[in-house]
Image (cartoon, rainbow, N blue to C red; front, side, top):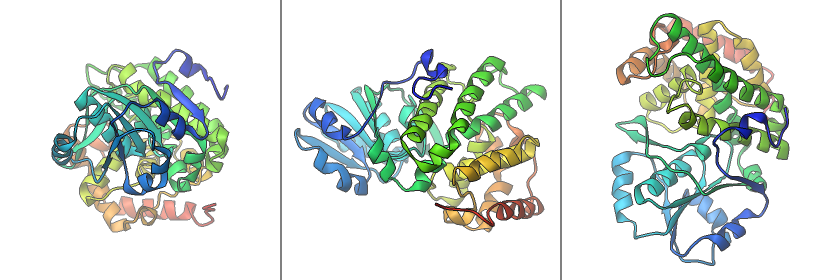
Length: 356
């Protein structure tokens, strides 16, 4: 499939995406005075020298709790527009502030770790749970190839999760439809599944370039993420073509451990788990995860297998309690024996893992 203008983007309502190098000085030129930069402290230290022509405010992200960010928003002086620089947290909060203020938004991803760059809605935390709120469209997404390459490899490579998850999302959607537990507003739609599958195939065709984080790999994963980020809106706020068990693992893990994660590690873990539970191409999907150079072992996420086990065992109760769309984990009881066997499978896969 064509790299730079794949068919799935030609008829898709996605955002203006600018690929290039040395893009920050160009952005600084076109921004109006008194804009608000939303970013992380280390990233601002890295890139602040590119923004010197205009007056500006800087908001350093320290979390996504709605109560806190709403209070912080009230403390900001009036600003003309919002510039998000960073990964998921910065870009989501930039969307949130742009929506709350009714101002224009410019996004500058610094890695390929999530598709928050291209989503219309912001993922904010309410009582520790992910809630998608607001709606905004960036004026442009600036993908500076050299900035992306500076990010740690594990951030960039793990971003395949946002496309790999289509596999398990479709399995969950079909499963829910078959047992009569599919939501009336989101009936199973084979055409939506086929469209998403074409994006997954496109991404997998370039998995080796994505691992290398070369120009072609960046463009391929970002193009796929552009489709995915807009799909939630384009399918009428229907998450089923793009999320399922894969993301539920991330939500459960984040909620039960109260820790932040590199998004792609627990989501890719969820892709493998969901594929196992559905008995559908689990080893094939794991091989792609390995080819991309993604480490989904709990120790690579900074937690223990005990913590992972607790989150997985409690996941059935969690997804039913908060009302996530029906999936196989709503019905499957995961116990310590299952997790022990899962650990053996995963550890075996990583015996000869090459991190480079």
